[in-house]
Image 1: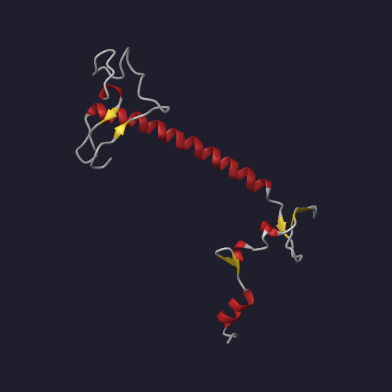
Image 2 (image 1 turned 30 degrees about the horizontal axis):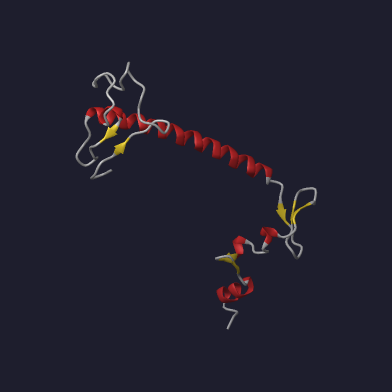
Length: 141
């Protein structure tokens, strides 16, 4: 895209169709079906774009921007709902480290199902906390 060719612009997964009567822009002949008339951008960002190519590319870019904004709001809302749903969960201090809710009902018998706390692991393997403390405090050999 920088040095070669940007390529075909798309809106809703298809070539550009809408615009003026029987054409995308008034610069093109009616009923023209060529690549340029349907949004193909042969230029690159390095060489520069023709005005019609810039316009076609900005149509496609706007759709991408709106789509990203909509997906971000949906995923943010889902994350907020998940956080609120798990807000009352806690890891119990019993030996299997069960996960319980406020009413002390068991939600999961062992935290993470593999009994490894991700805050106390290295690449999925449990860390010996006592050894780390001994090394840090100078109590180890």
